[in-house]
Image 1 (cartoon, rainbow, N blue to C red):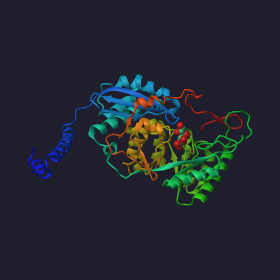
Image 2: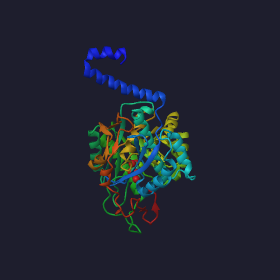
Image 3: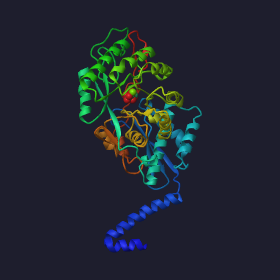
Length: 444
Ligand code: GCO
Ligand code: MG
């Protein structure tokens, strides 16, 4: 024992000193491992944990290494095509990666990206994300550090959130928004049902507008007027303090989108989301020239060819990508860094169809970057808490990162099995069709 330990032990008394010396020894051992280069863990197994604790299909990848007790989790959730993710992992990424060094995250990401030849597909990106985020979890567990420390440490104490206020009638939305504000939320997304048609993000409006079919129906100008009435009421009744967000969910034509963004100026939104479809992103330059309404876009993007032009030319204010649709934390942190150079902030997609592992991965990235914008909030129920330990803690409208190594989360696979995918869903988790009165299907 070094002289310093001897003097310390005399002062502190035997047992306490021994404990302190043991703690210091393990801390020293960790430093030594890092200094001498801890033995590189090899990937021994890759598996997929599927569950549906809140009515939405979640896919989580577990990567196990050859070092006892060293494994990690990553989010691979693509709820509408969940059954494609598992084979993409097990039949393609597992044979490619087992035996490879788990600590070469960038190299493995590039290998997986290249291995399908055709790339930037939603299902393959989600499979890659599951592995990628698991490797970051492993890196943190190996280093004994939360992942945000590997990304440069905290740039803020916690991650600011927005809640989803919705309802069939405007009064219901206002009440829901007031509930979030009572919890301390400073930002609230407002969405309302549209009488007689299938709106987005809120209860279904009563009745049905005339149409030539019996499918769910949507009529653009009626929905537009309803949205303006909602935003006017929200700003009037909730006051100027609260920041309002609204998701147009690609429901309008491009020229309606330009008008919608202009009409929103008087409501001073925090952002207007998905005012265009990904196929129409060339219209953003027209919107940008005509209005100061902040614009958010990206949850439907899978490829750098979609987000790069919008960020490069500063045509949006917030990047809304679904991190697992991008391929994981590795690409997300690169695009976040690109956004910082161009003052485009992050607002990563975080509804119920992101697993708690995916939420935690976003929180670790959000908390460590300068151009963080806002994070979407999802409430977790008891079933989710039964499966995932270390869930993000929400306090006063903020999410907090775990301070324990990696993501700081565990997945109870036995509990996950209690909540299997529900194959009774008529579309097997798919996205239903909504049509204009004449029967034309719309993107929604
Ligand atoms: C959002 C999104 C979601 C999507 C859903 C699709 O802004 O959170 O628009 O509500 O509709 O994630 O599965
Ligand atoms: Mg959206």
